[in-house]
Image (cartoon, rainbow, N blue to C red):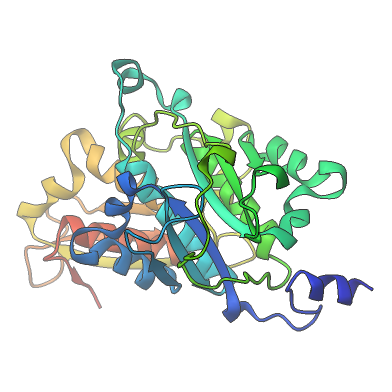
Length: 333
């Protein structure tokens, strides 16, 4: 019975996981998609490399039915999709401007952001749970608002519905990860349409619940307001927040360390005024980044040493961010 039920959801039977076939769709407005792609595709390519996931962005004529949002299709293993989704969300948060003076002056805990994913209609039960038990638990655990699009507001004939997640940068990221784990964590949920082209579906915008366009700060702006060593768990009542916010720490994934050499003249660029730039990179990536003291250099050079520590995905993402700041950085072997 359970095997048949999972098959009806497009999932692999128990004991036959096929993680390479997992997929997830994230909806991104035209206003934000440029930041996710980056100049010449640099950001999206870096996300692919750091996460190991396949990442496809729909062209500007391919939008999710009933919206003007582009589609970012992630494919790969569960861990690679979790990592790529977090990076995509981080870029979305970073690119969203503060539209009002009040929003610009708001402290980190009052910044509101949102991210929306599209899921197969047949898999909605994995998010809802019996009598809404699962979605209510997710809301309680993350303190984020999680809204599953109702059947009545879904596009007729389209076997996909949206899940909108709203919260501050911390709670939204945590909720996104937990929703993905609920959806993909124990098998394989398949979309009927494994692409980004929805030609043939007429947009019926008047029948859709529009996700509120909340004003929220970019992730980098939020990071600048945080002191080094900021304790998310203490601030939000989340136990072991860092492992939950970045995939790969839990489950014994282990820690890695990378070392780079950077020219003395580039230290200020990486560290920033009062350490703000390097603090931003640590908050975005989830990794520790340390620069050696003056005089502590790579043997035989005048280059200072940058040490990056964290779980493999966080460290790789931090490595990418450091290279964006200091392209002349070289690995220390």
